Every structure is written in structure tokens, then in C-alpha cells.
Amino acid sequence: GTGVGTVPGKQDYSVGTEAGGEVIVGGLTAEQIERVVRSHNSEVVFCYQRALTTDPSVFGKISFRWEIAASGAVTSVRVLENTTRNKALEDCVLDKIRTWRFPSNPVQSTRVDWPFIFKPRGN
Image (cartoon, rainbow, N blue to C red):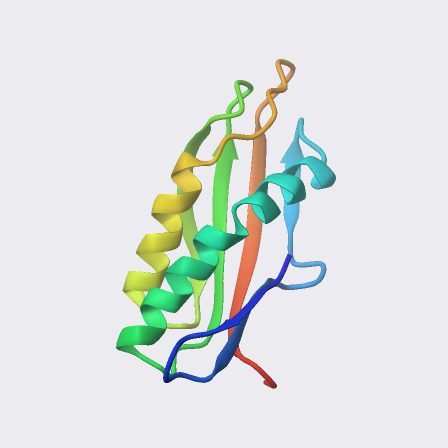
């Protein structure tokens, strides 16, 4: 999913994912994961907007790994890579992912590696 917008007084920006960068291991399908991530895209966009207000030049990729229990709750989340070097953006998205609910899968848990790309429009 992609979130596109502007911050007043700032440049255009976009938030997306790296094509083929997602890794999903376990019970849930890629479509199930993507549906939930897209439904929470506005939260990730909010984090980026907030980061841009303090650092208008922030851009890059933050890859997260999270574990989803059979119940659908996120049980752990961590950063695999952060090229933005913006700790506030990283922490904000981490906090959002912790609250996400995924479909339950009583058979097994699911591990997700998911990259978010934060960039000025046109780059």
C-alpha cells in the first residue's frame, strides 16, 4: 500500500513498501497480512508526517519483523533495518504495529518481515 500526501510548508511525500521485500512464514497468507497492513497505512503515514515536522529531509527504509500469535495478536516486533536514521519514526511505527490485530489461525503463528519505504515525492 502507498500513502501519499503533503505536510503544510513541506514537500510532497509517499509511504509504501518495497516490492517483493515482504517475507511471511507461518499460518497466515500474504493477502491476509497485506490487508491488515493496508488498513493501518494511515497510522504509518501519521508517523512519517510527524517525523517530517522535525526533520524535513527524512527518507529511507525501515524493515520490521513481527510475530503474530495464533490468536491474531502481535506478540513481538523489532527493527531489522533503519536507513532513515530517525529513531522517533522507528519508535512510532513500532508502537503502531504492536496494536494491530490479524486474523486468527489456530494452527500456527506467523512471522512477518515487512519493509516500509519513506520518501519525498518524485524520488
